[in-house]
Structure formats: C-alpha cells, structure tokens
Image (tube, rainbow, N blue to C red; front, side, top):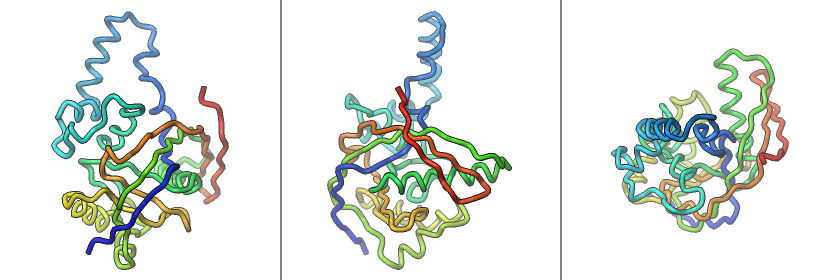
Length: 230
C-alpha cells in the first residue's frame, strides 16, 4: 500500500563535505591552460556525474538530471555518486537527495557515519570535519513509512546490511513513479528526513552556512560550530 502525504518545506538541510562544494581542484593547479584542459577531459571521462550527464549511467537518464540552474552539479552528484553499498533508500547504481527538516538532524546523521568511519579505521583521536549546508525547497507528495515499514526499513545496525528492506522498498516505489520517502531519522530522535528520488524535485537549492563537526569513535558526543568558508 502506498502511504502518500504532502511534504512542504522551505528550508530542508543537506550537509556535504565542504571540499565537494568548492571549485574543481584542477582549477587551483598552477599549470598551463592546455594541461588543465587535458586533465579536465580526463576527469570528465571518469567522473561518475559527468559520465551520467552524457548518458553513461543506465540507472538514471540525462533527461532526469539538472542543467543550467544554480547548484545543478551538486544535485546531480547526489544521484550519480551513490556509493558502493548505496544508502538507506537507494542502491549502488542510483543515488538520492537526502535531507532533513532540522539542521541538527543532518549533523547527527553525518556524525554517525563519520564515527563509524573512525571506528573502522581504528582512529581514536577526536577529529573535525568540514561540511557545507545545502538548503532546498520541497513541495509535493511523498511516501511516508507506515509502522510495519518503519520496523523493517529503519533498523540502525549493521550498516549496510540493515539497508536491505529499505532499498527493496525504494526500488519498488521508484519504478512506480514515487517522488521519494519521508521517514523518522534513525540517528536523531524526533528528527524527520526525506530521500528524494527525482532531481527535478529538489527546488531552488542554495548554500547555507558551513559547519565544523567534531566526532570521536570513543563516545557519542558531537561538537559543531559554524565557520566562514569564504
């Protein structure tokens, strides 16, 4: 059964590593313009977003992606860099735009994954990571999980094995034409998240503030502070 509900928010938050929100590293290199041009061509041949924009990703058509609008490359990257195991509501072939209603929810979500990274890498130090907040508008009908779906799709551990049921549900919804999924945050009690399946539904994305997030594999506390990314 499809459980549709309206989702209308002017200020959803998506935190991405700050390094991906800046200019291409190639543009910063002190090299001749011809060399930069050749390196750019090489990057275009291997960059998953650029490959998809040229029609090289069977999971998402170039016609679905954004062009000629502010932050189009940021939105497109969310759908074309899904990660080797995918995410909670996307597989390893097609990504989704994950966002939250509250900034604190996004902070807790990314902090969980950074803490897991540090634990797997056996790094005991408390490290700080820089993120750029991307704010976007959503207005439409999304699938909201019922109680049974929440029990099967929102298991906290182990990652990524616990994504099995949610990825299966997302695949069914995606090919049925769904806009995406709204669900309670797994990492921040009381928080609300959205996984949008369609690039065109990420309305008017713009850059908010930049944040430093400090985490440790040893404890659950999260430090965050705003900083100037200029």
